[in-house]
Amino acid sequence: MASQRAYSFTRQPDPENMSNSPADSGSCCGGPPSPMMGVQPEDLTTLPPLSSSTATWTLKVWPWRRQTTDYQKIKDHKYPGKGTMESPYVVDWLPDDAENPMGWTAFYRWALCIFVAIATLAVTFCSSAYSGGAREIIHDFGTTQIKFVLGVSLFVLGFAVGPLLWAPLSEIFGRRLLFIVTYIILTAFNAGACGAQNIDTLLVLRFFAGAVGSSPLTNAGGTIADCFPAKQRGLATCVFAAAPFMGPALGPIVGGFVGQTIGWRWIEGVMAIFSGVITIVGFFLYPETYAPVLLRKRALMLSQDTGLHYVSKFEAQKKLKYSQLFKISLSRPWILLFKEPIVLLMSIYMAIAYGILYMLFAAYPIVFQQKRGWSPGIGGLAFLGVLVGMLFAIVYTVFENIRYSKVVDRLGGRAPPEERLPSAIVASFFLPVGLFWFAWTNSPSIHWISPVAAGAPFGFGMVLVFLAVMNYLIDTYVIYAASVLAANSVLRSLFGMAFPLFTSSMYANLGIHWASSIPAFLALACIPAPIIFYLYGSKIRGMSKYATEAEEALNKMMSRPSQAPMEEKEAGGIAEEEKAREEVIIQTQETSGQKESV
Image 1 (cartoon, rainbow, N blue to C red):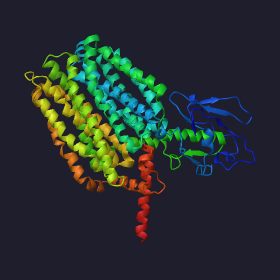
Image 2: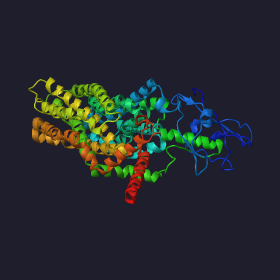
Image 3: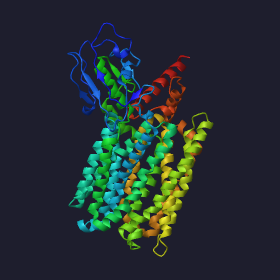
Image 4: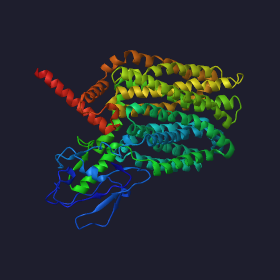
């Protein structure tokens, strides 16, 4: 029975008559247990010893740890194994475990979903709000428009660099610690940018702010996967996935008004305040949700208490060394990107859409401020069209999830990945329509409502493409999802970094109509991509090495009688990805051996 009281961890002496409970068996080590590595110091309180051979530890209840499971139940549970180094007890969640994030109340899980969405929005907000101080920064530092735009590009470049580091670190230290540390550093860099005395210092601080601030881009989605079963994850993902796009759309609006009223330094100040508030809230309320880290700590506590050997279910098999973890996280995304046509083409599609979004942060000031004479604040309001389109996309996705659920039920609980693509096909037409509309109605002689409204179909298509393609890639590369998403994120961020750099020159040389048409033609060229994969995706997957391995792994998991339904499985990271891959390779070798013997 779950309780609100703290754990009580007690190391027992070794009496001759002991129960059959694994946790009450005699010590296999014959000596004192090893120090409890991996448990946070603030989690343990040492009480006065009960005897010379007994000590008691209590795992405290904190605001970020709202519920605990009765420790005696954890200790008395029948775990598989013998408690030895060769055959350790394998620790898993209890059936009614209050500490299992999947079992938390719906209200609490949705509160976490909203929090991580806001945390992600804050980072992407910082990437674009900077553009509201263009005039003052160029004037104060005597710099050029292109060098000013580097402040946006370098921040987004940080989005490409950071996730390659934060993803494996989150698997070692957990979501909570990484979030707090990176957000503290992000706040410090934002505050430092507020006091920058030259453009070079400002640009360097912007890059590092983007790199450390990118941790929510990978770990926030992991938090949602930790807490929501797959059937409930669709709507939660919609709420979260809108944040990386709504943040950039809101940034120029806020940055424009702040910059024109109290100066560009206060734009950076607002960023620091925003990230600082989220850091404080997260410190007190954001819990650890990553199951491998939670169960690893529990196993260590049981080992310390009983003197027996416990491991979490995630470490029961071959454990990756940290060096291997980093090697895989840095290399496999590139392997998948360049060897898998599905990953490459769909990532390019998303990267083009993402690059166009960031290109607009340089294009809108030219069209609305330089050509129409609008102030930075009023010019930022032009992004409201894009924002409205994004909101409509979120509403549309709710109905799309209902459609997809019906397809899953009709097909017996599992739908092919291509069933994720109908919304991407719809979105592929909205993107060029919105961009061509903007390109040929952005002249000052045409009423401003037309180019502003043109942002709505672009924003609508942008979010739909993002959600559909992400779900398609996850469903196609189940066991490689972490690496595929990392590859997608890196390429997307590189395009987002590059596009703003040539925008000013392009508009100066081609004019506002043809320069705005270039991204429209790019979006037009991408229309066939989702259609081709919808029609021929099954055949393409059959010819792709990693997609085939993922399909075999999924079939294996679904065929196990004792396997919990797929929707109840915790989200895995690089370590779990590698273990699943090894299982598939072993199974394939065994199957090949059987065929040869026949």
